Image (cartoon, rainbow, N blue to C red; front, side, top):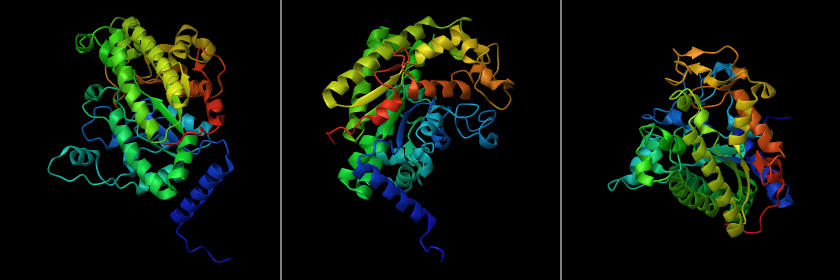
Length: 395
Protein backbone atom coordinates (compact mmCIF):
# COMPACT_ATOMS: atom_id res chain seq x y z
CA UNK A 1 0.00 0.00 0.00
CA UNK A 2 1.32 3.45 -0.88
CA UNK A 3 2.24 5.78 1.93
CA UNK A 4 -0.29 8.50 2.71
CA UNK A 5 0.52 11.90 1.26
CA UNK A 6 -1.42 13.63 4.04
CA UNK A 7 0.97 15.22 6.57
CA UNK A 8 0.99 13.46 9.93
CA UNK A 9 -0.24 16.50 11.89
CA UNK A 10 -3.21 16.78 9.50
CA UNK A 11 -3.97 13.07 9.90
CA UNK A 12 -3.87 13.48 13.68
CA UNK A 13 -6.23 16.43 13.51
CA UNK A 14 -8.61 14.51 11.24
CA UNK A 15 -8.60 11.61 13.70
CA UNK A 16 -9.24 14.02 16.57
CA UNK A 17 -12.17 15.61 14.75
CA UNK A 18 -13.60 12.16 14.00
CA UNK A 19 -13.30 11.19 17.66
CA UNK A 20 -14.94 14.44 18.72
CA UNK A 21 -17.79 13.81 16.27
CA UNK A 22 -18.28 10.36 17.82
CA UNK A 23 -18.48 11.89 21.29
CA UNK A 24 -20.86 14.64 20.25
CA UNK A 25 -23.26 12.72 18.07
CA UNK A 26 -23.43 9.43 19.98
CA UNK A 27 -23.85 11.10 23.36
CA UNK A 28 -20.91 9.13 24.76
CA UNK A 29 -20.22 10.14 28.36
CA UNK A 30 -16.48 10.62 28.25
CA UNK A 31 -14.42 13.72 28.90
CA UNK A 32 -12.81 14.77 25.61
CA UNK A 33 -10.52 17.30 27.26
CA UNK A 34 -9.33 18.87 30.50
CA UNK A 35 -9.17 22.67 30.58
CA UNK A 36 -6.91 23.69 33.47
CA UNK A 37 -6.95 26.98 35.38
CA UNK A 38 -5.11 27.93 38.53
CA UNK A 39 -1.79 28.15 40.31
CA UNK A 40 1.48 26.28 40.81
CA UNK A 41 -0.23 23.11 42.05
CA UNK A 42 -1.30 22.47 38.44
CA UNK A 43 1.13 24.64 36.43
CA UNK A 44 2.93 22.42 33.89
CA UNK A 45 5.18 25.08 32.41
CA UNK A 46 3.40 28.35 31.62
CA UNK A 47 5.70 30.27 33.94
CA UNK A 48 8.70 29.15 31.89
CA UNK A 49 7.58 31.77 29.39
CA UNK A 50 7.27 34.63 31.90
CA UNK A 51 10.54 36.53 31.80
CA UNK A 52 10.01 38.43 35.06
CA UNK A 53 8.35 35.75 37.18
CA UNK A 54 10.01 34.70 40.42
CA UNK A 55 7.77 31.62 40.56
CA UNK A 56 9.66 29.21 38.34
CA UNK A 57 10.66 25.58 38.58
CA UNK A 58 12.45 24.92 35.28
CA UNK A 59 15.73 24.05 36.96
CA UNK A 60 17.05 21.23 39.21
CA UNK A 61 16.21 19.68 41.58
CA UNK A 62 12.66 20.11 40.30
CA UNK A 63 11.72 17.20 38.07
CA UNK A 64 14.35 14.87 39.51
CA UNK A 65 11.86 11.98 39.29
CA UNK A 66 10.15 13.13 36.08
CA UNK A 67 10.83 11.33 32.79
CA UNK A 68 14.49 11.87 32.01
CA UNK A 69 14.91 13.80 35.28
CA UNK A 70 13.79 16.86 33.32
CA UNK A 71 12.90 20.16 34.99
CA UNK A 72 9.72 21.06 33.13
CA UNK A 73 8.40 23.94 35.20
CA UNK A 74 6.37 21.73 37.52
CA UNK A 75 6.81 22.57 41.20
CA UNK A 76 7.40 18.93 42.05
CA UNK A 77 9.95 16.17 42.06
CA UNK A 78 7.89 14.55 39.32
CA UNK A 79 4.28 14.71 38.19
CA UNK A 80 1.79 17.12 39.68
CA UNK A 81 -1.97 16.98 40.16
CA UNK A 82 -2.70 18.01 36.56
CA UNK A 83 -0.68 15.05 35.23
CA UNK A 84 -2.45 12.52 37.43
CA UNK A 85 -5.84 14.06 36.60
CA UNK A 86 -5.26 13.62 32.85
CA UNK A 87 -3.97 10.07 33.33
CA UNK A 88 -7.17 9.09 35.11
CA UNK A 89 -9.12 10.19 32.04
CA UNK A 90 -6.65 8.43 29.71
CA UNK A 91 -5.67 11.76 28.20
CA UNK A 92 -2.33 13.42 27.69
CA UNK A 93 -1.43 16.14 30.15
CA UNK A 94 -2.98 19.43 29.03
CA UNK A 95 0.01 21.41 27.67
CA UNK A 96 0.82 24.95 28.82
CA UNK A 97 -1.04 27.54 26.79
CA UNK A 98 1.99 29.81 26.39
CA UNK A 99 3.94 26.96 24.78
CA UNK A 100 1.49 27.14 21.86
CA UNK A 101 1.94 30.86 21.28
CA UNK A 102 4.29 32.59 18.87
CA UNK A 103 4.21 35.81 20.85
CA UNK A 104 5.57 36.37 24.33
CA UNK A 105 3.25 36.95 27.25
CA UNK A 106 4.81 40.41 27.62
CA UNK A 107 3.86 41.38 24.06
CA UNK A 108 0.34 40.05 24.55
CA UNK A 109 -0.07 42.25 27.61
CA UNK A 110 1.33 45.29 25.77
CA UNK A 111 -1.17 44.76 22.96
CA UNK A 112 -3.97 44.42 25.46
CA UNK A 113 -3.12 47.52 27.46
CA UNK A 114 -1.57 49.92 24.94
CA UNK A 115 -3.42 52.91 23.55
CA UNK A 116 -1.01 53.05 20.62
CA UNK A 117 -0.90 49.47 19.38
CA UNK A 118 -3.97 47.88 17.88
CA UNK A 119 -4.66 44.66 19.69
CA UNK A 120 -4.03 41.76 17.34
CA UNK A 121 -6.01 38.58 17.80
CA UNK A 122 -3.97 35.75 19.29
CA UNK A 123 -2.88 33.04 16.87
CA UNK A 124 -4.70 30.09 18.42
CA UNK A 125 -3.98 27.47 15.74
CA UNK A 126 -1.48 25.61 17.92
CA UNK A 127 -3.68 25.95 21.00
CA UNK A 128 -6.60 24.39 19.11
CA UNK A 129 -4.37 21.51 18.02
CA UNK A 130 -3.48 20.98 21.67
CA UNK A 131 -7.14 20.95 22.68
CA UNK A 132 -8.26 18.60 19.91
CA UNK A 133 -5.21 16.32 19.70
CA UNK A 134 -3.80 16.32 23.23
CA UNK A 135 -7.12 16.54 25.00
CA UNK A 136 -6.86 19.90 26.67
CA UNK A 137 -4.95 23.07 27.41
CA UNK A 138 -3.59 24.55 30.63
CA UNK A 139 -3.68 28.22 31.57
CA UNK A 140 -2.44 27.61 35.13
CA UNK A 141 0.39 29.80 36.36
CA UNK A 142 2.51 29.61 39.49
CA UNK A 143 1.75 32.53 41.79
CA UNK A 144 -1.73 33.13 40.39
CA UNK A 145 -4.59 34.08 42.66
CA UNK A 146 -8.25 34.96 42.53
CA UNK A 147 -7.41 38.60 43.19
CA UNK A 148 -5.24 40.31 40.60
CA UNK A 149 -3.09 41.89 43.31
CA UNK A 150 -2.10 38.41 44.54
CA UNK A 151 -0.14 37.92 41.33
CA UNK A 152 2.28 40.67 42.37
CA UNK A 153 3.74 38.46 45.12
CA UNK A 154 6.01 36.75 42.59
CA UNK A 155 6.27 39.83 40.31
CA UNK A 156 4.69 38.16 37.28
CA UNK A 157 2.14 35.42 36.75
CA UNK A 158 -1.00 34.92 34.68
CA UNK A 159 -3.89 36.06 36.81
CA UNK A 160 -7.10 34.03 36.82
CA UNK A 161 -8.78 36.90 34.97
CA UNK A 162 -6.08 36.76 32.28
CA UNK A 163 -6.28 32.97 32.13
CA UNK A 164 -10.00 33.25 31.47
CA UNK A 165 -9.48 35.80 28.71
CA UNK A 166 -6.91 33.53 27.05
CA UNK A 167 -9.53 30.78 27.16
CA UNK A 168 -11.99 33.18 25.55
CA UNK A 169 -9.62 33.49 22.59
CA UNK A 170 -9.29 29.69 22.34
CA UNK A 171 -13.07 29.32 22.65
CA UNK A 172 -13.61 31.63 19.68
CA UNK A 173 -11.25 29.59 17.50
CA UNK A 174 -12.85 26.34 18.66
CA UNK A 175 -16.22 27.63 17.47
CA UNK A 176 -14.61 28.44 14.12
CA UNK A 177 -13.20 24.90 13.83
CA UNK A 178 -16.19 22.88 15.04
CA UNK A 179 -19.14 25.22 14.62
CA UNK A 180 -20.98 26.72 17.58
CA UNK A 181 -23.28 23.75 18.42
CA UNK A 182 -20.49 21.16 18.29
CA UNK A 183 -18.07 23.39 20.21
CA UNK A 184 -20.71 23.91 22.90
CA UNK A 185 -21.33 20.16 23.19
CA UNK A 186 -17.59 19.43 23.27
CA UNK A 187 -16.97 21.91 26.08
CA UNK A 188 -20.04 20.78 28.00
CA UNK A 189 -18.50 17.29 28.21
CA UNK A 190 -15.01 18.59 29.07
CA UNK A 191 -13.78 18.92 32.64
CA UNK A 192 -12.66 22.33 33.88
CA UNK A 193 -10.02 21.65 36.54
CA UNK A 194 -9.37 24.60 38.85
CA UNK A 195 -6.82 24.93 41.65
CA UNK A 196 -6.81 28.46 43.02
CA UNK A 197 -6.87 30.36 46.30
CA UNK A 198 -3.73 29.12 48.04
CA UNK A 199 -1.71 32.19 47.13
CA UNK A 200 -4.54 34.48 48.22
CA UNK A 201 -4.58 32.70 51.59
CA UNK A 202 -0.80 32.85 52.02
CA UNK A 203 -0.73 36.51 51.00
CA UNK A 204 -3.23 37.41 53.73
CA UNK A 205 -1.63 35.19 56.39
CA UNK A 206 1.99 36.30 56.26
CA UNK A 207 3.12 38.31 59.32
CA UNK A 208 3.99 41.39 57.27
CA UNK A 209 0.81 41.33 55.14
CA UNK A 210 -1.11 44.57 54.64
CA UNK A 211 -4.20 42.71 53.41
CA UNK A 212 -5.93 42.44 56.83
CA UNK A 213 -5.81 46.21 57.07
CA UNK A 214 -7.14 46.59 53.53
CA UNK A 215 -9.89 43.95 53.54
CA UNK A 216 -10.71 43.57 57.22
CA UNK A 217 -11.49 40.29 58.97
CA UNK A 218 -10.76 36.87 57.46
CA UNK A 219 -14.47 36.43 56.71
CA UNK A 220 -14.63 39.77 54.90
CA UNK A 221 -11.55 38.80 52.90
CA UNK A 222 -13.13 35.48 51.91
CA UNK A 223 -16.30 37.34 50.94
CA UNK A 224 -14.19 39.47 48.59
CA UNK A 225 -12.55 36.36 47.15
CA UNK A 226 -15.93 34.70 46.56
CA UNK A 227 -17.36 37.83 44.93
CA UNK A 228 -14.48 37.81 42.45
CA UNK A 229 -14.44 34.03 41.98
CA UNK A 230 -18.18 34.06 41.22
CA UNK A 231 -17.58 36.48 38.36
CA UNK A 232 -14.70 34.38 37.04
CA UNK A 233 -16.69 31.14 37.13
CA UNK A 234 -19.65 32.79 35.43
CA UNK A 235 -17.31 33.99 32.70
CA UNK A 236 -16.13 30.41 32.19
CA UNK A 237 -19.76 29.31 32.08
CA UNK A 238 -20.50 31.91 29.41
CA UNK A 239 -17.64 30.38 27.41
CA UNK A 240 -19.05 26.86 27.63
CA UNK A 241 -17.86 25.38 30.93
CA UNK A 242 -20.44 23.05 32.48
CA UNK A 243 -18.42 20.56 34.56
CA UNK A 244 -16.09 21.92 37.23
CA UNK A 245 -13.55 19.95 39.28
CA UNK A 246 -12.32 22.21 42.07
CA UNK A 247 -9.31 21.47 44.26
CA UNK A 248 -10.10 23.16 47.56
CA UNK A 249 -7.53 24.81 49.79
CA UNK A 250 -5.23 22.44 51.66
CA UNK A 251 -4.14 22.87 55.27
CA UNK A 252 -2.14 25.85 54.06
CA UNK A 253 -0.82 26.89 57.45
CA UNK A 254 1.12 23.62 57.75
CA UNK A 255 3.23 24.05 54.64
CA UNK A 256 6.93 24.36 55.56
CA UNK A 257 7.08 28.03 54.59
CA UNK A 258 4.44 29.06 57.14
CA UNK A 259 5.41 26.43 59.71
CA UNK A 260 8.98 27.73 60.00
CA UNK A 261 7.81 31.07 61.41
CA UNK A 262 6.80 29.56 64.78
CA UNK A 263 7.93 25.92 64.53
CA UNK A 264 4.26 24.93 64.27
CA UNK A 265 1.35 25.29 61.86
CA UNK A 266 0.01 28.78 61.22
CA UNK A 267 -3.49 28.38 62.61
CA UNK A 268 -4.61 31.70 61.18
CA UNK A 269 -3.89 30.42 57.67
CA UNK A 270 -5.60 27.12 58.46
CA UNK A 271 -8.72 28.90 59.70
CA UNK A 272 -8.73 31.03 56.55
CA UNK A 273 -8.43 27.87 54.43
CA UNK A 274 -11.53 26.44 56.10
CA UNK A 275 -13.46 29.68 55.54
CA UNK A 276 -12.34 29.64 51.92
CA UNK A 277 -13.50 26.05 51.39
CA UNK A 278 -16.88 26.82 52.95
CA UNK A 279 -17.19 29.81 50.63
CA UNK A 280 -16.36 27.75 47.54
CA UNK A 281 -18.87 25.04 48.51
CA UNK A 282 -21.64 27.62 48.95
CA UNK A 283 -20.71 29.38 45.71
CA UNK A 284 -20.73 26.20 43.63
CA UNK A 285 -24.10 25.16 45.02
CA UNK A 286 -25.44 28.62 44.22
CA UNK A 287 -24.18 28.37 40.63
CA UNK A 288 -25.65 24.89 40.26
CA UNK A 289 -29.04 26.26 41.29
CA UNK A 290 -28.77 29.34 39.09
CA UNK A 291 -26.98 27.99 36.01
CA UNK A 292 -27.30 24.21 36.14
CA UNK A 293 -23.58 23.47 36.35
CA UNK A 294 -22.23 20.21 37.75
CA UNK A 295 -19.21 20.07 40.00
CA UNK A 296 -16.95 18.08 42.28
CA UNK A 297 -14.98 19.70 45.10
CA UNK A 298 -12.00 18.00 46.70
CA UNK A 299 -11.37 19.03 50.31
CA UNK A 300 -7.59 18.80 50.29
CA UNK A 301 -7.59 20.26 53.80
CA UNK A 302 -9.05 17.12 55.37
CA UNK A 303 -6.79 14.70 53.52
CA UNK A 304 -3.66 16.70 54.34
CA UNK A 305 -4.81 16.79 57.96
CA UNK A 306 -4.97 12.98 57.86
CA UNK A 307 -1.53 12.80 56.25
CA UNK A 308 -0.09 14.89 59.08
CA UNK A 309 -1.89 13.19 61.97
CA UNK A 310 -1.48 9.61 60.70
CA UNK A 311 1.48 9.68 58.31
CA UNK A 312 2.34 5.98 58.47
CA UNK A 313 -1.15 4.99 57.33
CA UNK A 314 -0.58 6.98 54.15
CA UNK A 315 3.00 5.94 53.48
CA UNK A 316 4.76 9.06 54.80
CA UNK A 317 7.56 9.38 57.33
CA UNK A 318 8.16 13.15 57.02
CA UNK A 319 5.21 15.57 57.01
CA UNK A 320 6.83 18.73 58.43
CA UNK A 321 10.00 19.40 56.48
CA UNK A 322 10.30 19.89 52.74
CA UNK A 323 12.26 17.39 50.68
CA UNK A 324 14.14 20.10 48.78
CA UNK A 325 15.29 23.42 50.23
CA UNK A 326 17.55 25.07 52.78
CA UNK A 327 17.12 25.64 56.51
CA UNK A 328 15.50 23.87 59.44
CA UNK A 329 12.33 23.00 57.55
CA UNK A 330 14.11 23.28 54.18
CA UNK A 331 11.85 26.28 53.69
CA UNK A 332 14.19 29.27 53.79
CA UNK A 333 14.49 29.30 49.99
CA UNK A 334 12.76 27.43 47.15
CA UNK A 335 14.12 24.24 45.62
CA UNK A 336 17.16 25.51 43.71
CA UNK A 337 20.16 23.58 42.34
CA UNK A 338 22.27 24.17 45.48
CA UNK A 339 19.47 23.20 47.89
CA UNK A 340 19.53 20.10 50.06
CA UNK A 341 17.65 17.17 48.52
CA UNK A 342 16.16 14.25 50.43
CA UNK A 343 16.74 10.67 49.30
CA UNK A 344 13.28 9.20 49.85
CA UNK A 345 10.97 11.57 48.03
CA UNK A 346 7.95 9.26 48.20
CA UNK A 347 8.05 9.32 52.00
CA UNK A 348 7.79 13.13 52.16
CA UNK A 349 4.51 15.04 52.10
CA UNK A 350 6.10 18.30 50.93
CA UNK A 351 8.44 18.70 48.00
CA UNK A 352 9.46 22.29 48.70
CA UNK A 353 8.36 25.15 50.92
CA UNK A 354 4.82 25.18 49.45
CA UNK A 355 4.14 22.20 47.20
CA UNK A 356 3.38 18.48 47.63
CA UNK A 357 5.56 15.69 46.36
CA UNK A 358 4.53 13.57 43.40
CA UNK A 359 3.45 10.86 45.84
CA UNK A 360 1.14 13.21 47.74
CA UNK A 361 -0.37 14.68 44.57
CA UNK A 362 -1.14 11.19 43.29
CA UNK A 363 -2.95 10.25 46.49
CA UNK A 364 -5.07 13.41 46.26
CA UNK A 365 -6.17 12.69 42.69
CA UNK A 366 -6.91 9.03 43.50
CA UNK A 367 -9.42 10.18 46.12
CA UNK A 368 -10.75 12.94 43.88
CA UNK A 369 -11.73 10.42 41.22
CA UNK A 370 -12.98 7.47 43.23
CA UNK A 371 -13.54 8.68 46.79
CA UNK A 372 -16.93 8.17 48.41
CA UNK A 373 -16.29 9.86 51.77
CA UNK A 374 -17.74 13.39 51.74
CA UNK A 375 -15.00 14.47 54.14
CA UNK A 376 -12.80 14.51 51.05
CA UNK A 377 -14.95 14.86 47.96
CA UNK A 378 -18.52 16.09 47.42
CA UNK A 379 -21.23 16.17 46.20
CA UNK A 380 -19.89 13.63 43.68
CA UNK A 381 -16.42 12.43 42.71
CA UNK A 382 -14.80 13.09 39.34
CA UNK A 383 -15.70 9.69 37.88
CA UNK A 384 -19.33 10.48 38.63
CA UNK A 385 -18.93 14.00 37.26
CA UNK A 386 -17.70 12.62 33.95
CA UNK A 387 -20.75 10.38 33.77
CA UNK A 388 -23.27 13.19 34.27
CA UNK A 389 -25.34 13.67 31.13
CA UNK A 390 -24.74 16.80 29.12
CA UNK A 391 -26.87 19.68 30.41
CA UNK A 392 -29.66 20.81 28.14
CA UNK A 393 -28.59 24.47 28.35
CA UNK A 394 -25.77 25.58 26.07
CA UNK A 395 -23.83 28.85 25.91
